[in-house]
Length: 304
Image (cartoon, rainbow, N blue to C red; front, side, top):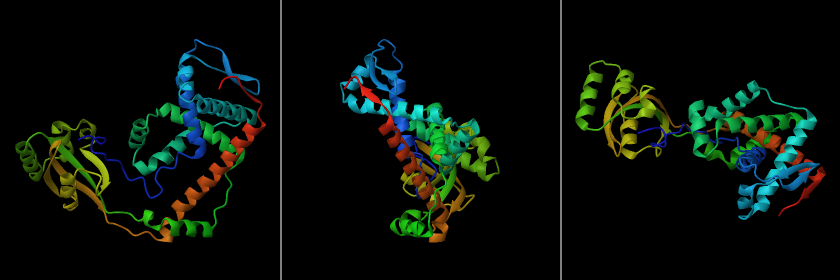
């Protein structure tokens, strides 16, 4: 049972992953189009001109156009507008700034590995995400991030989404996956005799994704795992070990940590809400900057 197969993803928190602001969504969509269309250089015919800069088409682009390409062209134009605006402003993002932003977005997932797994699940490569984050940071330097979030705004948001800030009971567990109950019982006996769980997981577990990490499957709440695995984990005390049978086989499960459920208060949620509302206000500034740049640009569409 791998992390993905088990649908084990560390809790992303009440607000979840907020990377997909309006500007980043635009940048990702445009980058995908450019990546695909740019892979073919057989046709240099211009389909649009932005401030004198041509956007060309190729055979694959024609295929996209035949399936509603007006939107695709608009995205390409917007990407060129953004590129020119950043170049004129002379802003840029350092590798350190991009890494810090990556780490910020990865934090709710528990690790960079889990975050990148999530990106890969939706078809985004790490390199492309880093490029788009560099653009986002560059635009933020143009529009400024000195926004104010008031106590009233924070309180209003909390009242609207109070229950989403509550935290369910969670468990962190490790497992050793084997084919038969006999193997599981043998391993359980060895553990009870004092052998090291991580070493046994590395040697015997069939789960290639977790055995190199001592069998650790991460933190999960109820409803995120197969039912019998979950029942075993939540029924154990920290340090306890049991056998659970699922569709993957037999698991020797050990609980390594537990966190009780918690009802949120305004004070406990204040920091998270303030950060989110600030991010949204900055995104609004970025949206306005892009809209203004598009309105000012001399855009000629040569293909519809």
